[in-house]
Structure formats: structure tokens, C-alpha cells
Picture (cartoon, rainbow, N blue to C red):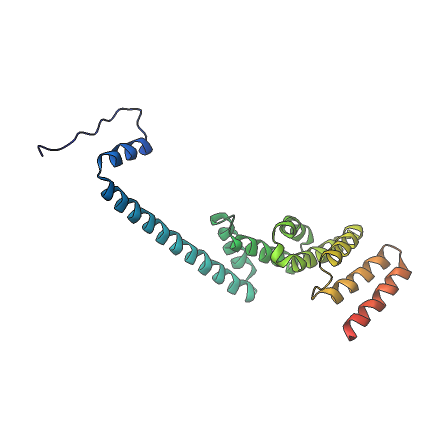
Length: 194
């Protein structure tokens, strides 16, 4: 090892500075190859991790579909903790909210769906529909009315139009707006029969 080059190290070096010192001693071609290998292995690791998240979500969804609420809830919470910013985490929150709705816990449903209705635009109408249902169960009729009107204004062609009209009619009646409720109910019936 007559041609060996000593790597100067001191106690203030971090992993980053040591890596930089080591790479500065390597020929440029070797450094490029090493960078490529590290990049490819990191990309492969991320792909494997994404596949695991997808499979974990699929497993949790199966539990949800079987109505195994406890197991589904634990699996969905674990997924959220593992990948909080992923699309699967948003889907998990939605399914958790539906579990709470199925269990008759409208306040828990609302806590999950209010923020989700703002940051999960891909299914905003469905998120808001279940939020509206939970608010209605909680007796928050003014919020229900405001949410329905906003949703219908933002998405007038939603597939949930007739259902939203029925909930709006019921809400208007609950708020003492009987004439408006009857008018909305007639519009809902026309929308259903068209």
C-alpha cells in the first residue's frame, strides 16, 4: 500500500463531511459510478416501500369491506402514521371517518372529514357528503345548509346532486324554512325522475 492516501479526519467531521472527503479522493469516473449505484438503489428502495404501502392499504380496505371495524381501524391508523403525506393516508382518513359514521360517532367523523374536505379535492363531493351527513346527525343544521349550498355551487354536476337536495330539504324544514324545504324537495324529485 505504498500509494495509499491517508484520509485526514478530525473529531468535528460529520458523515456528510467524511463522505465529501472520501469522494474527493476517488477518480471522477469512480465517483460517478458510485453515485449512480447509490441513486438506483435508493430508487429501488422507494419503489419497494411504495408497493408495501399500497399492499397495506389494500389489506386495510379488505378489512373495512368485511366490516371488521377494529382491525380495519388499527390498520388504517398504522398506515397514516407510516406515510402521513401519501394519497393512501388521505384514503385511510376517509375510511376511518366512514368507520366512525358506521359506529354512530358523528363528532369523530366530523373531526376527520373537515380537514380532508379541503385537501382531498379528488373526491371532495363524497367527502363533503359524508361530512354533511355527520353534521346533520349532530344537529348542526346551519353548517349542513352552508356546506350543501357551497358544494352544489362548486360542483353542480355532482352525482350526489339528488341526495344533497334531499338532505337540504330536510335541513331547511329543521331550520323552520318549510316552504323552502318543500320547494327543494320538489326539485330533488324532479332531479331523480329526469
